[in-house]
Image: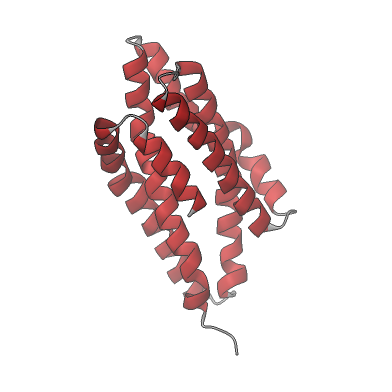
Length: 180
């Protein structure tokens, strides 16, 4: 007996919600960390630029490659890479060894992995729910609503608050979100 499409997509949507909320926290905490490391506005702006550079350079090739690779393996690999990089960054912050260069490098690598993960997770939706237009529309709507709420509405205040409590906490939290 085949499970209903909504039951099969629920784990993807739940994982997306957890992960993008961690991403939103990271988006807020990284510039805060940069500003705590340097007073140079140009240096701090490199952190923000680093969030977008992977999409400009890797976004299209990542999508083309994901079409040829096993999507589940791509998503797992991308999440493990992001978890490892962010755990390393959290350790640097916790030990007082954080610097602007490793922060920017971490953002770039996390962004590249995100290009692969996002392409794979979007392309796996029709595999999970089928090609019925109504079901695809509903699932894609839920996916992007979760993404918007987590990355733009819930994540940034969480990232700011956790950074205020402990500078390493939003980075460790985002690393944990990828493992979850």
